[in-house]
Length: 254
Image (cartoon, rainbow, N blue to C red):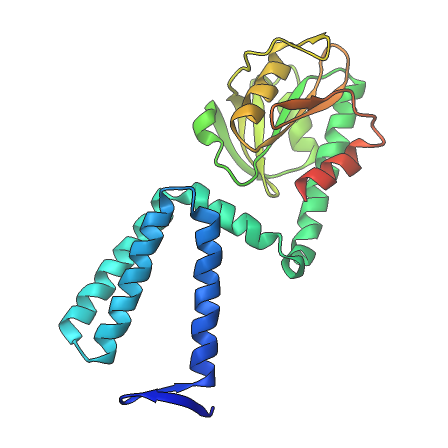
């Protein structure tokens, strides 16, 4: 690759310049995603450590370079552990890029199909249900209790959990991607008891409460009416027709 310019003994090629531009774009993109969080301060520290490591290696300061690399390894690990919700937001935005969504669409479609099949049967038999779709924010801190499941989402699994005779049927299930993470989760209740002229039961208030505090999408099947409803951002879509629930859920989750 041809040389563009030279700084002392350091030769800068077109490939080096492209590498630096791409690195700048990546860090700028991450900064925009994390700028309203505490994680951005750690990100700046990490960038500074990377820069100092590069300088120390370039001028052959071996001891300082070794120390900086050791600190950077610990710093990076701490960043991943402490800021899981923020990193999840970055990965979610990354997964929404057009060229990646093509590969992820199959799993999403399959998960939605399994959920829709289950809730339609639950609706017909008036079996209550509360299904939380986790998005970019970590909802576990907003949820009490919960029994770990860690299984792939399927119609049979959902029907067995929400069967009135099942010890897990009370509470909500948490779905992230194609995995059902927890069952029997207690969600925070909304202070709103009446919406659009309708009195809200405990299940609907729980769905509304979580949607007020996080960006999760919560699907509710009413035990009394069999209605299928969706809570999102502190609002409800009530009594969604069975022939429209799949298109609405697909649009909101993708």
